[in-house]
Length: 219
Length: 49
Image 1: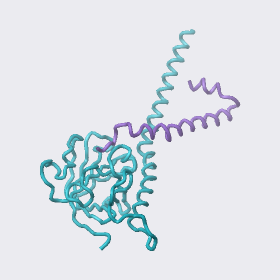
Image 2: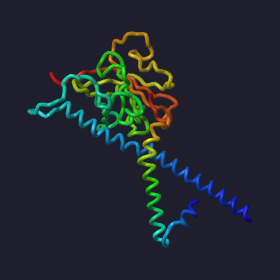
Image 3: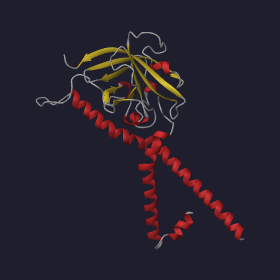
Image 4: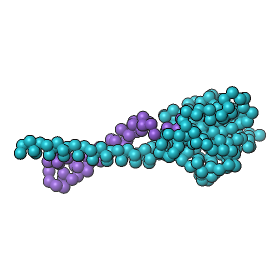
């Protein structure tokens, strides 16, 4: 009898721990999908506000904002990204860097690739399902859709020219001429990269665009 | 485990219920605001680079 109740107690303990672990796992999934967004939202609010301040400094007051792009401070916004197809209020501040810490704040510019409007490839990576999921909808982009990139000196409008799904090892999609690592670039391209399929990191979804228009901020 | 904890709680049923909810909330908050934010960047899902 004594042994019997000890076995029962042990089984009960294991069951209770199992159910608890299940609940915690479910909570973690919920956190990844919805909880992570609040972190990004907070950072985006600050980044976008800072960026707008630099673009439209108050007239009459001596502003510290530089007119040239200057050295990019890590964590600060490099550009503002708008994609009308994904909604008129779709707007994200692009940060510099693509490590986990940077991408928690928003889509990140791949260091070493071209800057917005430059000849070469302006590469931006973003989360598909977590941290506000900035690139959740880029699979819906179609040929000819516009991607608008605001920097401190100009507004660049890119047009989508193609989409592809590749393995994570296909690093050539971020080359100055995607797919042709040896070639010299002649066009200003944009490349958006994110995870594919959703909720996975098995593949990468890539969207390519080419610069169609440049509008200087100060004539 | 939970039976043991329940029996260890003081007071009547109401007090026990309140304390249980408080403890559960505390655990959930600790997970949500401390453990999960630490863990999330270390889990290799949705890492787009």
